[in-house]
Image (cartoon, rainbow, N blue to C red; front, side):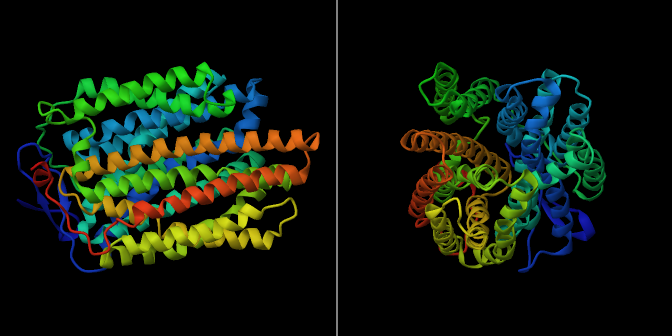
Length: 504
């Protein structure tokens, strides 16, 4: 059934049993028309809020220690609490989008995030701040998968690469400009403003989304997978808590790491047969999507890439601050060329991925990242900033042709309600892999610094820089491994697959 939406664009409404009836826009033409760009503006605004907030708080940890008289392990919960809430709510997003509609859920996510931000600014104790960060995370966790679903439906499968390129801009620039913004706000005002800044943005996003997103036309038909939720959401939270505790514990053998991670892993593993059971018609996360070969390859590629690239990304600001003596604001600006490089190639990569398939684009992107990152394996305490900035720029060029084409390779194969489930699956994959990567490179760097200090009879600038170089060598190898699944990504224009057909 056709219904009118923005500016007369016709959308198709599914009325099949088991589908949400959510509106999806038929795509036509090669470019992104005005209506898609208007919707993209809503999604990008929400993504900016969510992603910026993950990184903007990182520069305030030292301030939190002073204000709340806490140690580093305690204030780290302001980051961990947000991340765990974000990971826990992502599995619910696919079902809730089908059940209640993407517009309603998106508005709820913006309200939760904005309210959590204001509450964080009013916190008078560290415990209150952590609790309010959890509220933020519940809203923030829904914004990205919902944004992917909204954009994919608005543009249609033929233009997924281009809309993913649009969504990729805040995903890349957030980690770069978050520390810059956070450091600036703390310098000119106070730590409260790293949260209060979200209030005007949230109000604008709420009004904007209410005005331009198509009205939901939902026909609820799916029951909620309560057993799946009991297994998967706590399982993800416990597993990521254990993994996140590795740097603080100094390794994987500590009970603080092993106990929650093991319990979480058992719950996640137990979810798999339940999600695939024939009697479970609507699992919380649809693992049957793995019957789609392109989706499976994209998930594997995303997991490997997120571990390697996002995990190693924490090394850059630490090198600039601990080895070169830069403050957080300066370190943020020195990392910025990576984002600028990605901004150049991302729209081009998105367009080409739609026309010739993502395979060749991703292979080229990963190869470019390897070339740029290889320069950091020779890092010293006196390496020229020109060399470092140039290498970061090259890495950014590669990044712009890698992450979002992988996303588009997965989502372009999906239709109707499976789009929401696919974006949920990709976001869970990225969240888990990024957390594993952060823990891995934190341990590698810590152990490398300890070994270098022991060998030299104490910490020396050259020894500490050598620990960074060794960590980057591991990162280069892991990024290069991503070439293996990338070889199997489609090298042609991707056609959507009927989810029902994958079951036969």
